[in-house]
Length: 396
Ligand SMILES: Cc1cc2nc3c(=O)[nH]c(=O)nc-3n(C[C@H](O)[C@H](O)[C@H](O)COP(=O)(O)OP(=O)(O)OC[C@H]3O[C@@H](n4cnc5c(N)ncnc54)[C@H](O)[C@@H]3O)c2cc1C
Figure 1 (cartoon, helix red, strand yellow):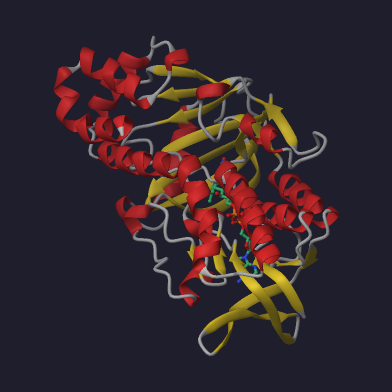
Figure 2 (spheres, rainbow, N blue to C red; figure 1 turned 135 degrees about the vertical axis):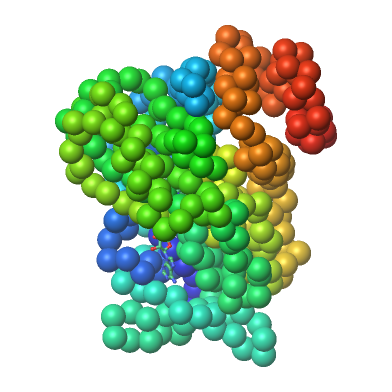
């Protein structure tokens, strides 16, 4: 078995990488350890309408509901409303993530990529220290799959990077522990994705309610692993649901647990190797949303692989075009949001209430980190010291 690239993981990052590389003529194999693409769903299923720009999904079967924007509730209930345009990566559509992932994979296959399910990468294949492909198990067989490029699109638990000597271990401080119910028999009925903040609600994270229809919604919580003991996330989520009259009579259709990296991105390129999506920690450190970045980075990765195949050069220098692309597109934003995450973690609930109060009537058509900070500091000069590092990054 010999390919231009073997992609480990058939999530959004893997499928989109495969699609763009295969479309340009590269011979691509995706290996996926699951028996069905996108199943089980481990996601709040919120995605920005920006996904439409990438033209990677046909039809509308993957859309559960279209959102008008987001509402953020501070600890005392003060509400900030953002339109879909400014609401970040998780607001625009609430999707059926299983269909979403399968449609992305179908598009990759249509462009010529091969997909092997029930196939788990267990190590890199190396010759004289050089990466030459992967070793994988497929049912009872162990296979050697040769490729000029190995792509680690293997999600939050990624091991591909580690096998290549990249430091991928996540500290508890950089990991959100998540639990989510899909609740039916509720009466939410809002066209907004809702976020609830506060130390009593979700320490170091937030509760989300993403409606999939009038009486169904994903209701989940992410709390920082360093601030929580085992089982705490579920306790906080159940407590939240019990306080909401529109949710408390809900019945679960699905319950999931998972982890979400809220770290700074890591090195994503080595000779004969690329990391994409959660494997490269391309997740927004404030919201934990990673779908849009997985898709955007997947496009750059696929196009870079296609060019490398054309030149028959697979060294770090050639593949670095990918890293330059995604860092220019959203790398700075990830760093800035990591700094913002640290500042927010340090804030008391009353400071969050004060921020929300200042922003509740803010005109979000002027939305930029710098303009928001300026508005906050004008109203609350005491925040200047806390927000200075962020202001410097926003100006850079
Ligand atoms: C509870 C929760 C809620 C979330 N909600 C949102 C949200 O609402 N919006 C949003 O934008 N983001 C959300 N995220 C984050 C989002 O799910 C990820 O950013 C996104 O899935 C990243 O895509 P990916 O392709 O990089 O990784 P994944 O989607 O995780 O895909 C990785 C794939 O690799 C496969 N794999 C792993 N190891 C191997 C191996 N050794 N061999 C073969 N296959 C392997 C896995 O089975 C998987 O299919 C959420 C995350 C969690 C945990």
